[in-house]
Image (cartoon, rainbow, N blue to C red; front, top):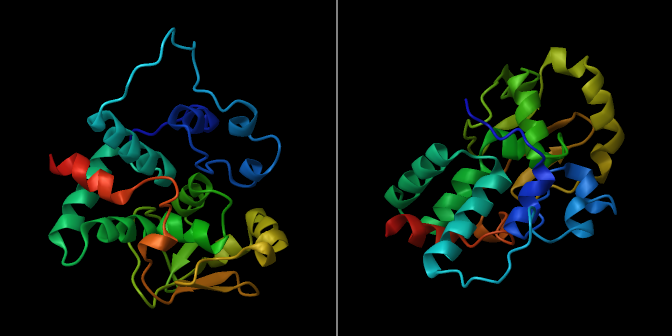
Length: 209
């Protein structure tokens, strides 16, 4: 499957927003966005006014990059969001937040969504006691997330144990730091998603034109 493999800090600079793609490094002075907030590449000779359509495209791209979702996946999420009852923007945020890789990241079992996606693909994450290696799998209320027996014996878990107590998951997730596991105790709202990065209503408008 196609996946961006270049420097992720370049993506933050391109979109003009810190997207926290490098985990803990984004909170240190080593963050590339803090040192060089200007877009990558040569600076344009003059500024060009961005159209309304261009602004909508930027919002959509920021959301895609923040959650590590491909365009084809994102379109599917949009179609599902508008087909569900309720507010389409909130449905879209909920679909993105309840992905397995995002929940692993939100619980603090990984420093970034990219790392969460990697450990899920390696087969060391379990859902309801069974191995699940599909990062895009959607979890529902009551599901539990932890490590498989093989995962608990890995060197990676030792790193997680050293840092897990400093993690602060959102209120719709419950973390058992001692057991290195978590539980989905509710459904996320718009305020609990990455809405500081993008505007979900603008994204709905972009696709609905």
